Length: 112
Image 1 (tube, helix red, strand yellow):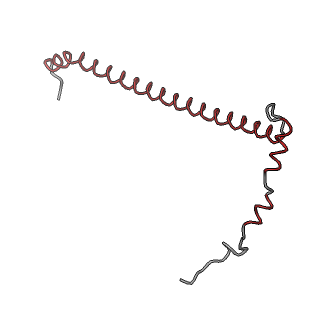
Image 2 (cartoon, rainbow, N blue to C red):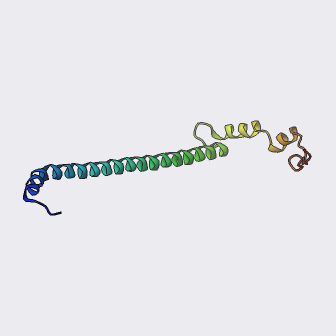
Image 3 (cartoon, rainbow, N blue to C red):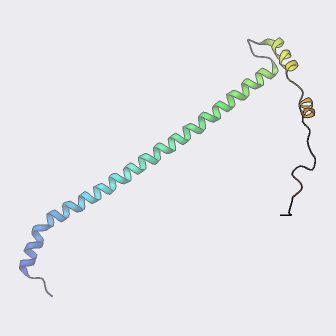
């Protein structure tokens, strides 16, 4: 089955349309890839910022707690630190309020 000259004439007239459609497809793929990269970059930056914010808040809270325990905070002074110590109940006293069963959670009922 050979190609006839009339077939070539029909093919040559359609080449510009085929080329345009291929260019459009390539551009569409490039645009899709660029959008996906931008979206992943935004997500990455957002994750990085959220982690840094939580770490910073944790460090600040730890320093504030340390200062309050020591009683060296500028507004509180040493007197407030003593009051906090007096107000805090001992952990041993709290444990004495609860009755605990030593066998709790150690026995299995397999009759069933």
